[in-house]
Image (tube, rainbow, N blue to C red; front, side):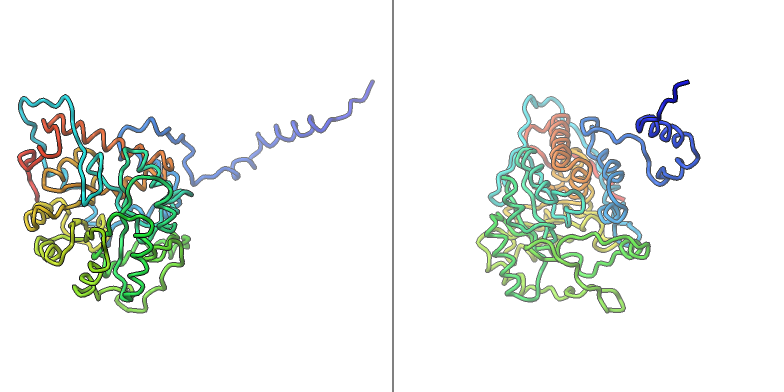
Length: 398
């Protein structure tokens, strides 16, 4: 009888068949991850659906950084609940065969009254970071982007990555030479306006501490205020009350000095009272940005939608009011516009889009919001932004 020699192919095939049936295979499977299919981007029809995809793709510490609010997250929840307490009231017979959403804010032309909010460390969400965000925003009808002071890339690289207008966020710096340097970099990169952020003076995130105790890695990203981009995180505070260094000193003298350094408009972000809004307008600020940092500044701040009309009424009509915190749909945008905002800024939803699908995800979530806004305007009989006013809504704030 002729002896048949075993080939390498048959030996490996037999070994594979044996391993496939062995109990050794089960321990090699990852029991901690869901192996269900991630949907394709075109399957998602609302912006909020991108949240689950971002959650599935991101490490825990990165997801937590995007998701959390301060302390017990009352304000985070109330920002969303406030939209449920505002009803849209349609008009009767109105020609809405065409809907015009174009506007201009502080000289920046916009096809829709929507900005990308400043938010930190997009490089932790996707390899392209803020460059990808800017590209996605540009693809979505040239949506302007407010570049975060804590961006993962230098402001000049972000601005050069695409063509939609950019503004830049400034966190106050006690060193005026440092302030001037940051502003000069942003202006040299083509920033059309500066947004000085004045909330979060003593923020502290229990959720970040929790992640560190679980040995989660650092989020990464830029140093606060760094127009240059990447850098090490600031050292932890030795203050027993956990107040971060470099805060709690903000004053009008600094604000007035910044105003004198600029030849572009200056907006202020983090305003929650009509009294403060009026004071900023009196000090020459060109726009008021109503924000509670998405519920990340101080817990038990009011929801931004609840204070929006008070702030609009407090400032001259020449001073546009911007708005963020809690927006998830085009109807939400319409409610904010009805309460007097001239434009809204989108934060978390943009981060979901970038984390889920990169620059095309940013483009898609913006296009969904833009389409929903146009539909909501048509359904309520508002053919253009000038026709949107408070008669559009009924308010039941609690």
